[in-house]
Image 1: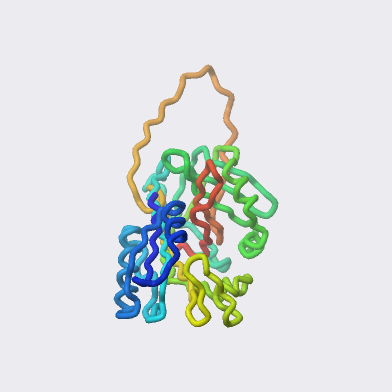
Image 2: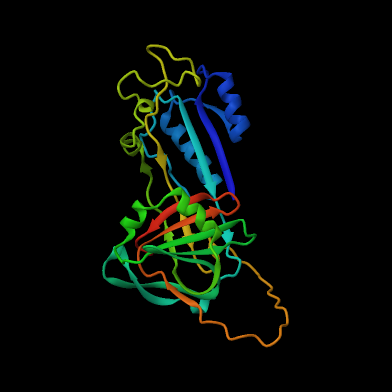
Length: 297
């Protein structure tokens, strides 16, 4: 896992030293002077190349064309890259076409991985939770599947930080899991309108003159900082080897026992409808990624 932060700031602009020291100390963010006034398009290309390098070329063109201009003074960039193999991979030969209710509609065949193993499992009101560990045990992949084929919106509306945190401590059970392979590469999302709708307005200078980032750079009547936009882009691929494909080898040793009682059959979980996924840091409960899959294709 690689987390990188960087500040691309207009050279010679009067940023406060305390602000620069703070982000370097707490976020490991390097401060890189850049000149937006001469060629904003070249500045955007430079920032996009840095993001691509930090994400092994999985995130390309984060900043859209014409998103920066000669009035741009600062771009804060954050990149997160994860390549994690399952503790025990899915067998390639077990992957077969199985029906999936794409966007909650009629079922279509998609490549479905299958494995019976000890997974975290819980049946909750309205949904089923299954967690799959990555090598090392500190990270896990979580699936939240609604009981209703069209229940994704209801599940999302009831999702809380507490629900997600409790899913880092699911009791392990024998589960026959059917999980679709998927790769998601959505385009860049501009979040300004969404954030403003959530109530974050003064940071975007709404109403005019309300933005106040004086602790970053001195605020003058005719020269002050405000947020113009926030761009977000993701990439995730889940397959038999793990998340963002990687090979893994596991040696399993069993202890000899006396005659065992018959084990109950594994619980079958078919992830055959739109679902929520999360990649969680188990010790802290923090979600590194959180999203939905409505169409594995």
